[in-house]
Every structure is written in structure tokens, then in C-alpha cells.
Image (tube, rainbow, N blue to C red; front, side, top):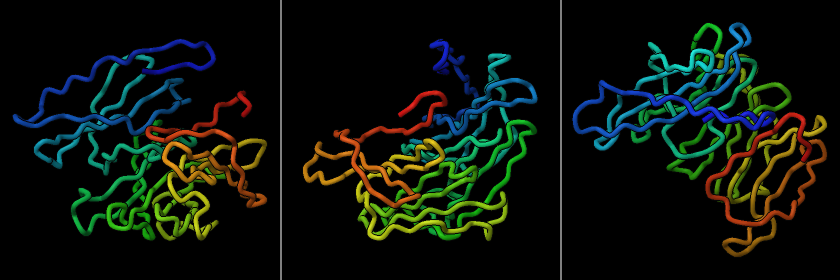
Length: 251
């Protein structure tokens, strides 16, 4: 479903019919990108369908056009993101970005990479993330966001060891990743929520600002310009979460 925050109108997307699913497989679908194509004055959604139960490696990609209100299958074979997490995708300058593994998660040589899909010409660029750590082995959270107009990759160790921020200089060039910040120990030892931009100042949100009991966690922000850590008096338990910056709405 698409939701226009200004007009408060909803648009229910048509169902995506999958007719080539192998017998005995269950289909899962996950939206990987949403953005605006100014060349055609159109909003588009990118979705991946993949098979599980039993596990399979086949996946198919589809793109939805708001102008035509229809889905179209894409002839691409690119890494996808199958985990139930937020912050894995980013829309920036008419390009949809997300991170995924070059091989299924149980394969030892799987590498984390950034997938960039251009909404104008549907060209895909793959950028490897060479310094990433495996999530299931080291309990590391991965997150994509925008920082000063650039793609930012955040690597957060759940044990509070560190909180690293990298930015990408050029798509397709893995050597152009640059580390900007390292917080060690991490001021947000439990869950990283996202990035909020206000008045030119980038603020990071996390949880656990003095909370000691389950359900008594407090959202925390870190002002990178001053490196001051502050709680915002919002408590609760983060389960499914997403942080977004909405133009024209103050926080």
C-alpha cells in the first residue's frame, strides 16, 4: 500500500501473481525499493519474490509503476535481502539501494554488498562492503542511511563493543568506502533505529539510555556535531521499527 502523507490518500497495489513457483515451495515477497522517477513522473516499487520451505536459491524481481498501476517482471539476477529487519534499504537521487549477501546466509564465503538499482534506466551496480562482519557469527547489525548526501553504512555490534559509520564515495568501487566515526564502546548497546536529519544536524537514534529492565528502554540520540548523547523520554520495547525523516514536519 502507498500512503500520501500530504493528501492522506491510500493506494492499494494490485496483487502480484506468481505462476512459475515450483511444486512444494512456499513463496515469500519483500519490498526492496520505493522511489520517484522524474524522467517519467512516476513512483515505482521494487519487490523480490523467493522460495522457501524447502529452501531454494531462485528469486524473481518485479517493478510496480504507479502511472500504469501494474507490475512488470525484471530480467535481473542480483542479491536480495531476506531477513526481517529495517534499515536495509535506501532511496537517494532516483536510485534504490539495499544490502544483501552474494550467496545464501549459510554459505561461508558469502559477502555483504550494496545493490544499487537506477529507476530511470534500470541499470544495477554492485558495490562490495569489504569490512563488514557476519551478522549470525559476531551478532552485528547492518544499516543503510543517508549522511550529508552520501550513502552511509552503519555497523553496530549488539554486545556494545562498537558502532562504526562508513560512507561511500563512488558506486561500484569498494575502495571508496571511508570510515567517518567509531563509537567504542557503543552508546546504544541494544538496537540501532536509524538516522534523522534536522536543521543540517545528523542525529542517530538508539535504545537503552539508562534502562535496566525489559520494557524500560529509552530512545537515545547522538548529535554527531557535538557527540553529545541525550535521551528523548520515549520508552518502550522496540520490536518492528523504522525511523524516517518527513519533509515539512518538525520533530
